[in-house]
Image (cartoon, rainbow over all chains, first blue to last red):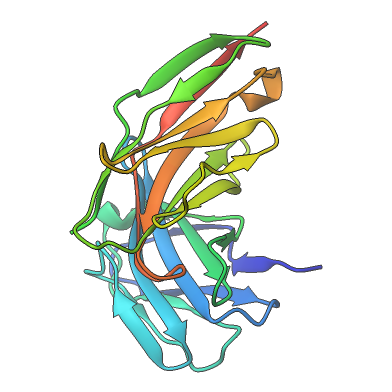
Length: 112
Length: 114
């Protein structure tokens, strides 16, 4: 089944403890993105990648890192999480030439 | 910088009636794409419809149509014959090239009344 998977789906952590949220797609898509969704603010793009080793900042990259060493994976790294990074995170992918983004199920992160 | 504005935080519509969700955008780039997504209460993001900036005709997908008025920079979503299952949050979004840089609006919550 073609899909985008994210792990973990739910995470509660403490301030300053490094964490990684994984994202993987099995559709051989070139494009991948990370978004965060906060109440009343819609989705805001954190980082995106156009292919392996090619990444760029979105609208809210501060406090996040990404890497794209393999086409299928696009992990989101929070090196020192803070409470203002408590949010719902979505990973998405799309192939070159297609407007449709395929979204993962979301990861709900709480930083205390 | 690109910007999406959805001015209706919440909308109500009677079942079987049509409803229009507003979206205006701002960009200086002549080449862009406009999207609508649906997010039900379960949380997943569902792609509904796409309009390219150079497309001459308004996009349609089943009961969804996109009323694209380029000069006014608007891309309203029209849902015909509303169903109870249409109750959800709806997001308008824009991107420049394929699905690289993307910007979403704040969303409109649609409630369909029986």
